[in-house]
Image (cartoon, rainbow, N blue to C red; front, side, top):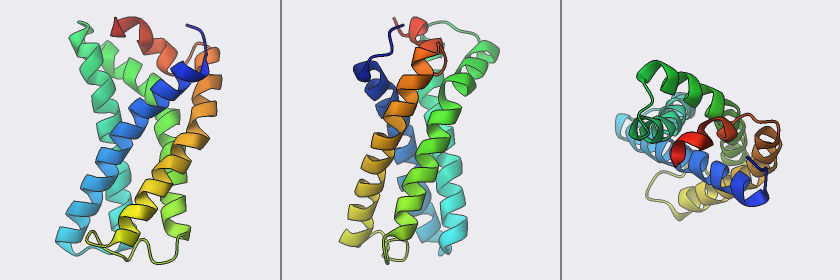
Length: 146
C-alpha cells in the first residue's frame, strides 16, 4: 500500500469518526450523570477507543475475518492513531478557557470540540502517513476493505 496523503487522510478520518462518536457520547452521558471533568474525559476516551475499534472491526467482519484475527488487526491498525488523536483533542479542549465547563447547550463547547477534532486530524494525519509507509496501521487492514 502506498503511503499517500490521501490514504493517510482517509485512515485519519476513519479514526476521527470513532473518536468523535465516543467524545460526544461520553460528554452526553457524563453531563446527564452530573460528572465533573476528569471522569467525563476518561469516559470519552474509553468510548473513543471503543467506537474507533468498532468501526474497523465492522469492516473486517464484513470481509469475513474471524473475531480473533479481526481484533488483532483492529488493535494493530488503530491504537496509535486513536491514542494520538485523543491526547491532542482532549489537550485542546483543556486549554480552551471554559470549554470543559461550558456544557452541551453551549456554543463554546461545540466550537471548542470542533476545533479540537480538526487539530487532532491535522496532527494525526502525518503520523498515519508515516505508519502506513512502514506497512503498519491502516495498511494492515486495507487489504480486507475491498
